[in-house]
Amino acid sequence: GMGLGMPEFLPLREHFDLVGFDPRGVGESTPATCARSPHDHTVSHQPASLPEYVQLLRHNREVGLGCRAESGRLVDHMDTGSVARDVDAIRAALGEEQISWLGLSYGTEIGLLYAELYPERVRAMVLDGAVDHSLDPFTAARDEAVATEAALGRFADWCAGSSDCVLRHREVVEEVRRLLDTAEESGVWNSDAGRSATATEVTAGIYGYLNLRDMWPALAEALAEALDPEGPDAASLASATMFVSPGYPAYRIVGCHDFTAGTPTYAAMREQRRALRELAPVMWRYTEFSDFASGCAGWPVEPANPPREHQVSGTPTVLVATSAHDPATPAHWAEALAAQFEDARLLTFDGDGHTAALNSGCAREHEARYLIDLEPPPEGLVCRD
View 1 (cartoon, rainbow, N blue to C red):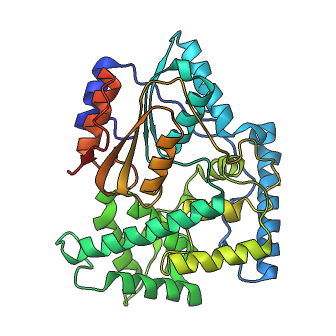
View 2 (spheres, rainbow, N blue to C red; view 1 turned 180 degrees about the vertical axis):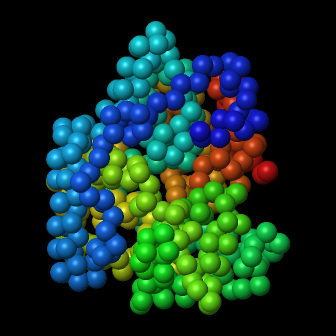
């Protein structure tokens, strides 16, 4: 996976054994399963009243207890600190003195914690699509809301000028706002689920498509289906949400270990809802970190790796990369992550989508060269594909 088949990454195959692994709780590792899905369309992610808040807490608690009932003590040990130690167990099992790490998105946090624990074992490290583990989830969610709203605007601008966009003669941001208002009031039919999709689900679907620049034409088509006056259908949008992913229970368990510090008060959640609406008037209902902030409220498993400040020294120069207009991991998180290393370089792709590597051939070329030759690109290099 992860774009390793793209031509700019092919030299990596000549110089390295490529080792991927399924972190705890997912894929071929012992999977974490939960008696019920963390997502329930009848439970509000952004409670607007005290009863909704109480309902959210009760739901999350029941989900978490159901995960423990099915997965046992595994749920207590799925934090990323444990995953970083697993990486070192893999290194030792392979008989290697050092590792070269290519970490995208969540892989940047695994890399950070690995480097903090074992700096001398890092030969080279690329961290692309930076997660800033020092942020509290409310701040992270606000940052993401701003970035996601901006990405919707850039999608709309692209659409207006592109023959690849089926919505090109329409006011895209207005249409999306109208679609979400409709979803809020009455739902928008989702043929896959056999029920109406909620405004949160539609937002989460748009977010899913926005993350990959190559998916923008498909996003326009999915929006057109949901806006079809003859028979709207949000199935394509809903298919791009985390909610329907088989890994969603594990994702929630990990997120609640890593990105929460306990249960927010109703007053705090109400203030968060207000702030998100102000920062992202269209896309405020969903980002990954708002999903953690709401989904981990009332969660019954003690967080093993809550947000904290990091300071890493003793590694070679680490290459941190970002897409300038990343909807999921805002570009300034990359600067913040780079600052948590004594020695780091920042590479920016001046474009759209989540991570530089999955959206830019130029970024892949520089990342591969650095991993092979240990030559980081010059400080402040900007890729313009």
